[in-house]
Length: 103
Image (spheres, rainbow, N blue to C red):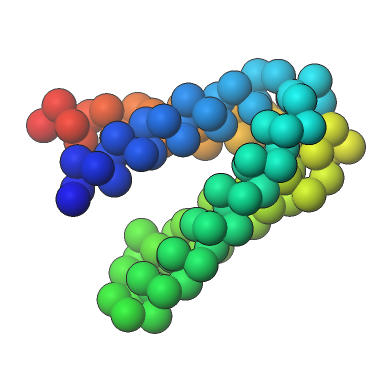
């Protein structure tokens, strides 16, 4: 199961890097997908946090998901720094989860 989570985060990391690089030129359909992924992740991490009290889930709820929901909602009207944060978040997710698989 841990490898599946790592592979999912690798795909999401690449996706977030794409959104961060494209910025306000990102297609509307990609913003919509970002909002749906963030919404589904919100439900998942709320459930996991209240059943396990995991700091990892709390981190997703406090740091990751608000940014993704913000960019998904405001789309191309989001400020440039939000896209930079999404890019760095994608890079960090990709880096961390590739290292987890290579362990």
